[in-house]
Image (cartoon, rainbow, N blue to C red):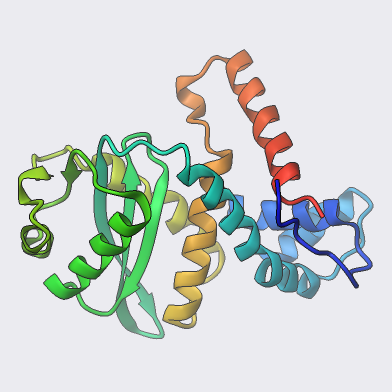
Length: 232
């Protein structure tokens, strides 16, 4: 991998930084809980250091994972859905796009649930990944209107239950939201949701569909690739 991440001026070893970021993003843990887990392993780190590492390195790790995944991506089917998130008493929408394998492609935070926002979201997706063969959505009219503007209305599929995969993809995020005791601003939500989606993709192997042996092999391969991606 090129464009190695710099850990210059950090006294803590890169391996500990990578482990702390992985624990916090992948699992529904607080900064203090990650601190306690690392302490049990003989690593004395303050929770504020973990917060700084997540803010400093989380985006860089996710960006490198996304760049690598984008080259090996299938556009067979996209699933689009949105979920309400409360921030300081106000309702915001978190739009999410996943592929047919359940990997998060893009997340987008907005205040409105209109055609203009849906169009902006789908354009962003197409610019990054190209055109899909099928787009599965719920019956929100904004999706149909946006796809009609793009000349892709014929790709839309609104059949009942066909979008359950995307609705279920909100669950890991909801667990993280609960552990974090909600978000304080739309910018924080956008930043964390993007980081969480890409890093969660990397370690999610749909364990319930794999044999024990196959899962262990995939888990080991993911950890090896993670260390390579995050290498100094």
